[in-house]
Length: 232
Image (cartoon, rainbow, N blue to C red; front, side, top):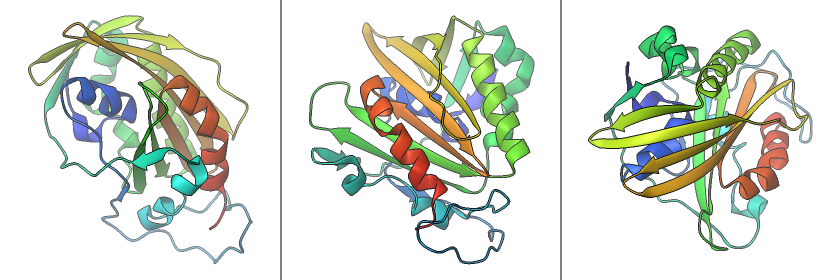
């Protein structure tokens, strides 16, 4: 099964590419089409569950330095890479097929992302991605990829010419939003290892995905969900 890293959910893009000497970009928004129109919301009000947000609107709901606090620096934007990634040793992913394994219905046009480095020590990166779509598509798309990946305790990834061993562990997720998923991933390549926690929360028509150091994910997840769910 082969997949393109540029369309993969951040669990692949965040660390698999890092170990393959490719980093994720800073704040970005890509909106090839017009968004569903919605009435203007007053400040402090929650976004109605039926509203699909544009990429531009999602980008305004991303965490920024003022939300995170002192010591955080935004990652500089990097050109996107289109390396092929081969996954083996995970029947659940194989059965889903290539398109589904890279997100399938997660490849929404409405999306935004950002990433930061914290000066407090090593393993100090945290990334956030926002997606908007119908509740059913978000639930199905996020759920199937998390379930497939956590069904395989260990599998292998070939990112370009870099072989990577991935181990996964399903974690309990905090009681936020309408649905939530969480996992811990360990990536080993060339004698180096990296541990990434990833938690996704669906709140209405928005999914918040926060990845990175477990401590930083835990520290900023609730704030990310609250900001994504509220009108600016």
